[in-house]
Length: 389
Ligand code: SF4
Image (cartoon, rainbow, N blue to C red; front, side):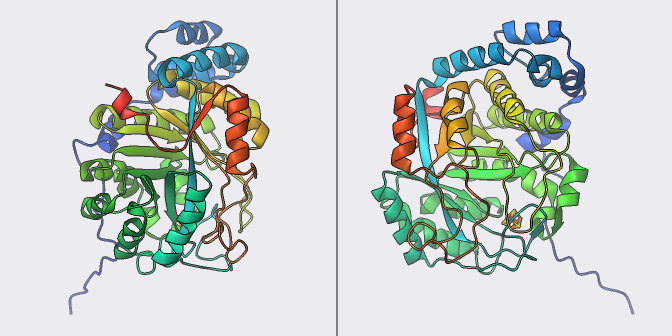
């Protein structure tokens, strides 16, 4: 009798041609990575003086030699940010739909093996959470969920977006990655933004932290922003979770290369990047190499200088003091008053959060701090591609 092979995951291997994912994989990062490890003071000077900066310049600006020039990086990043984005920071809130997940990711509180209180909001409960957030001023919500194709299904997500579309002007999505047809349904329901964290770009580290589930498929995830853009998503955010990869410089270089490829391929879209540092979560994962505050400032400045048209998101994982300072270094959007558990705004304490928040101020307090720093808080996602004409 002939053995029959049953393929449980039908996703194709590799990434399609003519995508930003393919462009990224074809990018030779050896030069930028060598500079990130051992740029000279002259390389750093050249990168700081350049008017248009390359990935080689990014390598130089991330190098240990550039760490000695942090003040110069901060001054240049501030000037570049004000020139391109003005003194404006967009505020948004994550709205957790579900913490159900069948994947095992070593660093995440929602990981399938963790014994935690699980909850999935009904579309009516999602609408109630959204009302709480719009009452607090938010007009841009990010819907977040774990990976559970039956409980957090395509239909469920479409229902959630539909429930909010009339009252929430800007809806983005951060869930498991989907095919183009599903993204198209979500766009038609009223979703305009897609957030996909590759988490870590080094393939062997990726395999070591994503133990089970669909998220193990690196290439399928890498090409998700292309599928979202093809489906009509207006804004695309990429992310890397700092602390997974021992060599954080290589991850930041890869993230920037992916964002650059996305900007070239999907130039009508708003592109943003996010580089959160790891925070404590259920499962007690220890970061391979925590990123220090000084290193984090260097990363934010380098990204701002090399990707002048790309938004930079900063989450409530960072402390209030750090966030107040970071808006001057090129950060363009921030979450505020975040709860990372489903139902956390109306009924806190009913389910496990994904991670501990560090900046626990209310949205009004965050907005007041931004104003005190000379920045205007904007509650709707209105800046970006349209102003990049
Ligand atoms: S990172 Fe996402 S897929 Fe992985 S365990 Fe957490 S919620 Fe699930």
